[in-house]
Length: 202
Image (tube, rainbow, N blue to C red; front, top):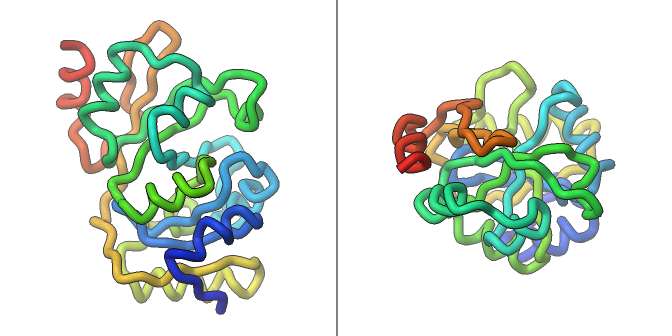
Protein backbone atom coordinates (compact mmCIF):
# COMPACT_ATOMS: atom_id res chain seq x y z
CA UNK A 1 0.00 0.00 0.00
CA UNK A 2 1.35 3.42 -1.00
CA UNK A 3 0.23 5.87 1.69
CA UNK A 4 1.09 9.55 1.30
CA UNK A 5 0.52 12.75 3.27
CA UNK A 6 -1.22 15.96 2.20
CA UNK A 7 2.18 17.55 1.61
CA UNK A 8 3.09 14.76 -0.83
CA UNK A 9 0.06 15.20 -3.10
CA UNK A 10 1.41 17.92 -5.49
CA UNK A 11 4.66 16.04 -6.06
CA UNK A 12 2.88 12.71 -6.65
CA UNK A 13 0.48 14.36 -9.11
CA UNK A 14 3.37 16.08 -10.90
CA UNK A 15 5.12 12.74 -11.35
CA UNK A 16 2.03 11.17 -12.90
CA UNK A 17 0.57 9.55 -9.80
CA UNK A 18 -3.08 8.64 -9.32
CA UNK A 19 -4.17 9.61 -5.81
CA UNK A 20 -7.26 8.53 -3.86
CA UNK A 21 -8.42 11.24 -1.46
CA UNK A 22 -11.48 12.44 0.44
CA UNK A 23 -13.02 15.55 -1.14
CA UNK A 24 -15.76 17.92 0.00
CA UNK A 25 -18.43 15.76 -1.69
CA UNK A 26 -17.24 12.15 -1.98
CA UNK A 27 -14.11 10.03 -1.77
CA UNK A 28 -12.32 10.68 -5.04
CA UNK A 29 -9.76 9.47 -7.57
CA UNK A 30 -7.47 12.24 -8.80
CA UNK A 31 -4.70 12.81 -11.33
CA UNK A 32 -3.45 15.52 -13.68
CA UNK A 33 -6.27 16.39 -16.08
CA UNK A 34 -3.86 17.11 -18.95
CA UNK A 35 -2.53 13.54 -18.90
CA UNK A 36 -4.84 11.60 -21.21
CA UNK A 37 -2.87 8.41 -20.51
CA UNK A 38 -3.74 8.71 -16.80
CA UNK A 39 -7.40 9.40 -17.60
CA UNK A 40 -7.46 6.20 -19.64
CA UNK A 41 -6.20 4.27 -16.61
CA UNK A 42 -8.93 5.76 -14.42
CA UNK A 43 -11.55 4.79 -17.01
CA UNK A 44 -10.28 1.23 -16.71
CA UNK A 45 -10.15 1.35 -12.90
CA UNK A 46 -13.78 2.51 -12.73
CA UNK A 47 -14.89 0.27 -15.62
CA UNK A 48 -16.47 3.40 -17.05
CA UNK A 49 -17.48 4.20 -20.62
CA UNK A 50 -14.88 6.33 -22.40
CA UNK A 51 -17.75 8.51 -23.66
CA UNK A 52 -18.41 9.89 -20.16
CA UNK A 53 -16.33 12.83 -18.99
CA UNK A 54 -14.65 13.21 -15.62
CA UNK A 55 -15.09 16.35 -13.49
CA UNK A 56 -12.08 18.65 -13.23
CA UNK A 57 -10.94 20.42 -10.06
CA UNK A 58 -9.33 23.84 -10.42
CA UNK A 59 -7.99 26.29 -7.86
CA UNK A 60 -9.23 29.61 -9.25
CA UNK A 61 -11.12 31.32 -12.07
CA UNK A 62 -7.90 32.25 -13.89
CA UNK A 63 -7.27 28.56 -14.49
CA UNK A 64 -10.79 28.17 -15.88
CA UNK A 65 -10.31 31.08 -18.29
CA UNK A 66 -7.01 29.63 -19.54
CA UNK A 67 -8.79 26.50 -20.77
CA UNK A 68 -12.24 27.91 -21.62
CA UNK A 69 -11.58 31.52 -22.60
CA UNK A 70 -13.49 34.54 -21.38
CA UNK A 71 -16.38 33.68 -19.08
CA UNK A 72 -19.64 35.55 -19.69
CA UNK A 73 -21.39 37.67 -17.06
CA UNK A 74 -24.12 35.16 -16.21
CA UNK A 75 -21.69 32.28 -15.68
CA UNK A 76 -19.45 34.57 -13.66
CA UNK A 77 -22.38 35.35 -11.39
CA UNK A 78 -22.99 31.65 -10.75
CA UNK A 79 -19.28 31.08 -10.10
CA UNK A 80 -19.18 33.90 -7.59
CA UNK A 81 -22.18 32.48 -5.73
CA UNK A 82 -21.30 28.79 -5.67
CA UNK A 83 -17.50 28.48 -5.88
CA UNK A 84 -15.69 27.18 -3.94
CA UNK A 85 -18.48 24.67 -3.62
CA UNK A 86 -20.45 21.71 -4.82
CA UNK A 87 -21.40 22.88 -8.31
CA UNK A 88 -19.78 21.49 -11.46
CA UNK A 89 -20.16 23.64 -14.59
CA UNK A 90 -19.68 22.09 -18.05
CA UNK A 91 -18.14 24.50 -20.54
CA UNK A 92 -16.52 24.19 -23.99
CA UNK A 93 -12.73 23.83 -24.06
CA UNK A 94 -10.72 26.21 -26.22
CA UNK A 95 -8.41 24.81 -28.85
CA UNK A 96 -4.61 24.87 -28.60
CA UNK A 97 -4.21 23.99 -24.93
CA UNK A 98 -3.44 20.74 -23.13
CA UNK A 99 -7.11 19.94 -22.51
CA UNK A 100 -8.07 20.38 -26.15
CA UNK A 101 -8.49 16.60 -26.53
CA UNK A 102 -11.75 17.21 -24.64
CA UNK A 103 -14.55 19.05 -26.43
CA UNK A 104 -16.25 20.03 -23.16
CA UNK A 105 -15.39 19.55 -19.50
CA UNK A 106 -17.07 20.01 -16.14
CA UNK A 107 -15.13 22.30 -13.80
CA UNK A 108 -15.43 23.23 -10.15
CA UNK A 109 -13.41 24.71 -7.33
CA UNK A 110 -13.93 22.28 -4.43
CA UNK A 111 -14.88 23.59 -1.02
CA UNK A 112 -11.80 21.93 0.42
CA UNK A 113 -8.81 24.04 1.46
CA UNK A 114 -6.17 21.32 1.24
CA UNK A 115 -7.26 20.42 -2.29
CA UNK A 116 -7.27 24.04 -3.48
CA UNK A 117 -3.80 24.50 -1.96
CA UNK A 118 -2.42 21.37 -3.64
CA UNK A 119 -3.83 22.37 -7.04
CA UNK A 120 -2.48 25.92 -6.63
CA UNK A 121 0.97 24.53 -5.89
CA UNK A 122 1.21 22.67 -9.20
CA UNK A 123 -0.91 25.28 -11.05
CA UNK A 124 -2.60 22.57 -13.11
CA UNK A 125 -6.14 21.15 -13.12
CA UNK A 126 -6.79 17.66 -11.77
CA UNK A 127 -9.44 15.07 -12.48
CA UNK A 128 -11.68 14.46 -9.47
CA UNK A 129 -14.03 11.53 -9.96
CA UNK A 130 -15.79 9.39 -7.37
CA UNK A 131 -14.18 6.29 -5.88
CA UNK A 132 -16.50 3.59 -7.17
CA UNK A 133 -17.01 1.25 -10.07
CA UNK A 134 -19.29 2.62 -12.76
CA UNK A 135 -22.95 1.94 -12.02
CA UNK A 136 -22.30 1.11 -8.36
CA UNK A 137 -23.21 3.24 -5.35
CA UNK A 138 -20.94 6.07 -4.28
CA UNK A 139 -18.58 5.21 -1.45
CA UNK A 140 -19.38 7.30 1.61
CA UNK A 141 -17.85 5.14 4.34
CA UNK A 142 -14.13 5.27 5.10
CA UNK A 143 -13.84 1.50 5.51
CA UNK A 144 -15.35 1.05 2.04
CA UNK A 145 -12.92 3.65 0.71
CA UNK A 146 -9.94 1.72 2.11
CA UNK A 147 -11.34 -1.55 0.75
CA UNK A 148 -11.74 0.01 -2.72
CA UNK A 149 -8.12 1.21 -2.59
CA UNK A 150 -6.86 -2.24 -1.58
CA UNK A 151 -8.84 -3.88 -4.38
CA UNK A 152 -7.62 -1.65 -7.20
CA UNK A 153 -4.05 -1.65 -5.83
CA UNK A 154 -3.78 -5.28 -6.89
CA UNK A 155 -3.78 -4.22 -10.55
CA UNK A 156 -2.92 -0.51 -10.63
CA UNK A 157 -0.20 1.72 -9.22
CA UNK A 158 -2.22 4.14 -7.08
CA UNK A 159 -1.61 6.20 -3.93
CA UNK A 160 -3.81 6.81 -0.90
CA UNK A 161 -3.90 10.04 1.07
CA UNK A 162 -5.49 8.85 4.29
CA UNK A 163 -6.36 12.05 6.16
CA UNK A 164 -8.97 12.86 8.78
CA UNK A 165 -11.40 14.55 6.40
CA UNK A 166 -14.93 13.27 5.86
CA UNK A 167 -16.89 14.04 2.68
CA UNK A 168 -20.56 15.00 3.02
CA UNK A 169 -21.50 11.93 0.96
CA UNK A 170 -23.53 13.76 -1.71
CA UNK A 171 -22.36 14.41 -5.28
CA UNK A 172 -22.00 17.88 -6.72
CA UNK A 173 -24.79 19.28 -8.88
CA UNK A 174 -23.75 19.35 -12.56
CA UNK A 175 -25.01 21.95 -15.02
CA UNK A 176 -24.12 22.60 -18.63
CA UNK A 177 -23.90 25.97 -20.34
CA UNK A 178 -25.10 25.56 -23.93
CA UNK A 179 -23.73 27.38 -26.98
CA UNK A 180 -26.58 29.92 -26.78
CA UNK A 181 -25.84 30.43 -23.05
CA UNK A 182 -28.83 28.53 -21.73
CA UNK A 183 -28.41 26.43 -18.58
CA UNK A 184 -29.23 22.71 -18.50
CA UNK A 185 -29.31 20.30 -15.57
CA UNK A 186 -27.15 17.21 -16.01
CA UNK A 187 -27.31 15.89 -12.43
CA UNK A 188 -28.88 17.31 -9.31
CA UNK A 189 -26.71 16.83 -6.26
CA UNK A 190 -26.26 18.84 -3.09
CA UNK A 191 -27.40 22.16 -4.65
CA UNK A 192 -30.98 22.61 -5.86
CA UNK A 193 -31.11 23.23 -9.61
CA UNK A 194 -34.03 25.67 -9.49
CA UNK A 195 -32.06 27.86 -7.11
CA UNK A 196 -29.14 27.89 -9.57
CA UNK A 197 -31.49 28.49 -12.51
CA UNK A 198 -33.11 31.49 -10.81
CA UNK A 199 -29.75 33.00 -9.88
CA UNK A 200 -28.49 32.46 -13.43
CA UNK A 201 -31.47 34.18 -15.04
CA UNK A 202 -31.93 37.09 -12.65
